[in-house]
Amino acid sequence: MESSGDHAPAADTQSQTPGESQLVAAARVFALLADPTRLHLVWLLTQGEADVNTLAQATGAAQPTVSQHLAKLRLAGLVEPRREGRRSIYELRDGHLRRLVLEGLSHADHQVSGMPWHD
Image 1: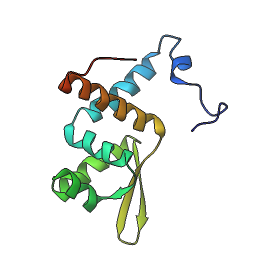
Image 2: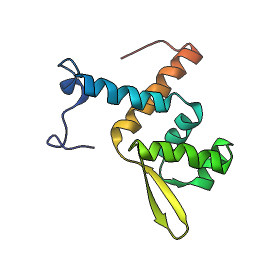
Image 3: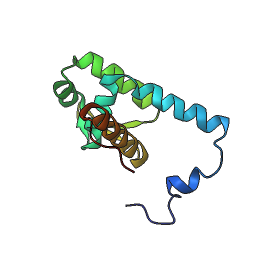
Image 4: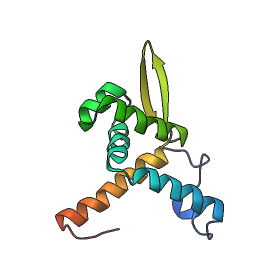
């Protein structure tokens, strides 16, 4: 959990109208997450770090496809790789993305399942 001095809660940071740069940056993140395979990869990384082969197996996508998606996420600064021998192990860069993805999938679960909406 973040300490109170690290970052303002989302509710506090959004009391002001976002500027063009914030809107563009957020739209880029949403655009990257609009691909179901990339969204699945990021969701898997909310569960913990993983290498390309593990992610490919979990998504059912080919390893080169997963590598290409991870490269896009890495270039956007959403995931971070580290080398472990010949393998690259990926993890999410920050908790904001983790919470965004989990909330988005929770929203989708309500849509698909018909569960009542809540705050």
